[in-house]
Image (cartoon, rainbow, N blue to C red; front, side, top):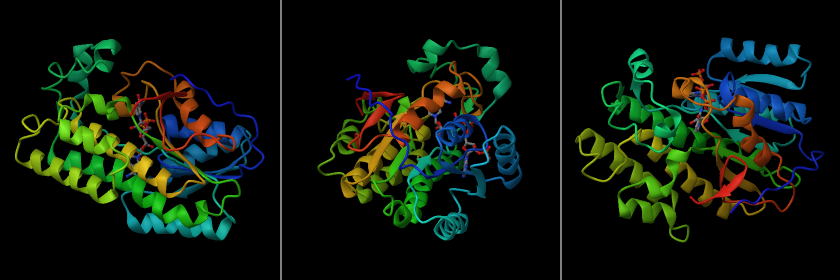
Length: 308
Ligand SMILES: NC(=O)c1ccc[n+]([C@@H]2O[C@H](COP(=O)([O-])OP(=O)(O)OC[C@H]3O[C@@H](n4cnc5c(N)ncnc54)[C@H](OP(=O)(O)O)[C@@H]3O)[C@@H](O)[C@H]2O)c1
């Protein structure tokens, strides 16, 4: 492990879309891609927040950032973005699926009072400490899976015709998480199914997600070997990685990868993260700007190739 692909030629990169980009890692990803010369569509589900974020970048001199509304859970909103890209550009070179939801309801003051150190968080050792302040309900889990898995899938499918027109093969970056890693899934069957690229299919992934939601309804997550810490978020990102591999196999001319951005100080982790958004966007930007012949169907821990 530990490979690094240098970024050297941006000339073929013209048009990019970043989802969930009004703040956090997505906003910074737009900034770095625009700085590299791409015309970037900053998308956000909230029109006002998206326009404000776009203005901020435009006023800093990045006139190549434009806004379009996108709620990744809303089919009409996805269609409207696809139509916009088709009429405005001749192709799409980069899609960064960055929008994400945590899948939990959190008592933020209670969480802060626990004062959990980053090492404990990352090792998954905080699980018993957070039981009273962090709740997974059916609705929070469904929102999470619909955003982190089906949102990515539906946006990608809608934009695929334009991505297929990219001259050197499009780059798709799916922003995943450390919590997606297969070794963290207690259930051996799920771990094996998600890890076997030879037999993985989208239907198989659907069945795993349905089983997860069924077990959650039955209050049987732990009994059936789902993760205790952020269970919905973890399975949403593990299935996202699996989808990344299925897609990469289907479109060998593209570079389609997933990336853990690092433990970054943003709203999604209630600002428990330790890295800056600049550091957090590095992996996404590197994978968005991969040179020809770069890796595909891989998982990266920031800029380094890692095990699924
Ligand atoms: N921060 C970390 O340590 C960390 C670690 C691992 C992975 N990640 C991943 O990194 C990505 C970016 O997260 P972040 O840390 O930058 O968190 P963030 O600042 O909370 O950003 C999340 C973004 O996703 C957007 N979003 C949520 N649901 C959406 C929907 N249905 N449609 C469109 N946009 C939606 C949010 O929009 P609103 O402002 O409207 O809510 C926001 O723009 C996520 O995929 C996250 O899972 C982060």
